[in-house]
Length: 91
Length: 91
Length: 91
Length: 91
View 1 (cartoon, rainbow over the protein chains, first blue to last red):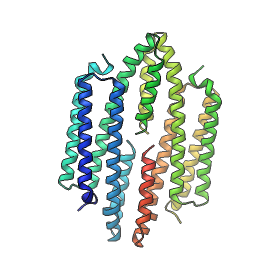
View 2 (cartoon, one colour):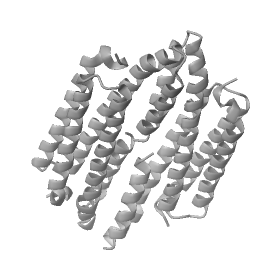
View 3 (cartoon, chains in turn purple, red, yellow, cyan):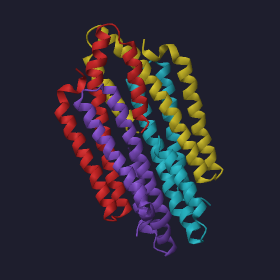
View 4 (cartoon, helix red, strand yellow):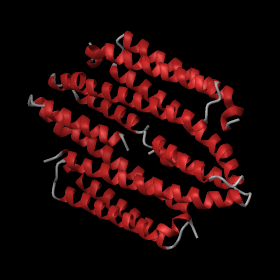
């Protein structure tokens, strides 16, 4: 059981909303909408994805990382976490 | 006709790929995949969206903005562009 | 004369303030301040630098880029601009 | 003793280098250097600051956060950490 398990429904709802936003982008392109309006929508999908990523990180630290540290074998989890934060903060 | 018109097919292909990646994220959550693996996939969707945004910006500057400056009424377009860059660079 | 010329004093003031913030960071480290407080200060220097970068971009587009497009030789300037936006949006 | 204590010299060296880069920016503005060259230097200061921030986060998680979890009172530290990651990833 991972950290996000208890928020699984909320997470799926967010991902479905993001999928809908991406389909909305395709529709905007199809209908030749104005570039800046499409770009504004791209920025809002990025913000939604970032919120998902932050939520996952948060659940992960609160559960998987905390539990592995409590069990005394947190080192590897911490390495892995920091690599994920670096990738994520790079976007 | 907007700047992205000539790359419309490429843009739609990218957006469909992103839609597929977002559905892949939903599948990962459904199958209780490991948080860090989901987060890695989130980072790669973010990178793909950023590439789409940069491409749109690029086409927009090369066409809409350049043409409006050539016609002598670029001021408003430049204001609008910089606001979009600020939103986009903020993610 | 570049785009930032008219705001040169404001730009120098901002850069001096940033220099002061970076020296403040060194002091915090010297005085063994708490990591999270140092990190918060790092985030605020990042925000200040980003504002400087956005201001430079803005002046650049409004002046150098616009003028070169008006003179009919904007292509190279636009290439160069988009490369700078990509580097800048990557941070 | 905080996480960065053992890397204090390295951290101070990096901060001094960043201070030097910011002074370099002031010199570039004084000498009316080209906007895009100044912006490139701004991007490289941003990258250097980000590396400092990631290093601080890393030391913090490996030491302060890990130790407080081991002592059984990690909850507050984890909240604080995630707030710092969110601020930091926002730049």
